[in-house]
Image 1 (cartoon, each protein chain N blue to C red):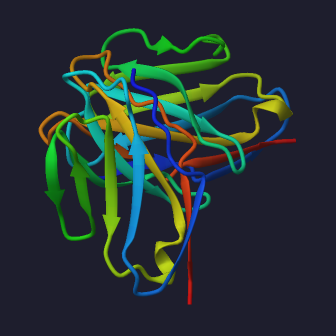
Image 2: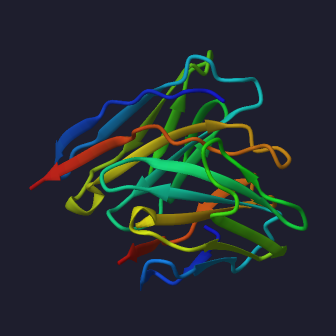
Length: 116
Length: 112
């Protein structure tokens, strides 16, 4: 299947700092990417839909000023957690849609964010 | 978007065939059915996708009845490494509105 690369895999930061997570589609172009959040032993929760060249669409209850999404190219979307606080600690996962492969969704390996 | 219902957990033994059924009663005409596998602290891994009838690949089979209100993921001869959470997702991927909403998944435990 197609490869989606997500970095970093793990990040620890101090409260009040900002953290950027990158999601890249390595062997296909992705006009649409998705960002999810997952708490321990829970399912994935969709946070936002990232569209290349336009503003992201956020799910209800997700603060767009808190979770900044940029999708400036067909292979890269970034999620920036601004002014992070301990309650933002979570596992963040991105996915990208491969239009040329029956629009299948492929996921990154996830980023474990720990805010101290 | 269609809501999915799966068993919360299943147990199996090495070498057995495992069938996980997912209900999606309000699936839309243009919705696909996709199954993912997730290990702890990893992103979901694509297993198989289908629209109707039967789909098969090197790791699994997907059975979809004519009414498409359910689907069954079949894993042949499971091993310990197949212990994971399996998610059934239903969605329309067309355009920028298509996305996938995850249900609670099925935690499969394979024992020796």
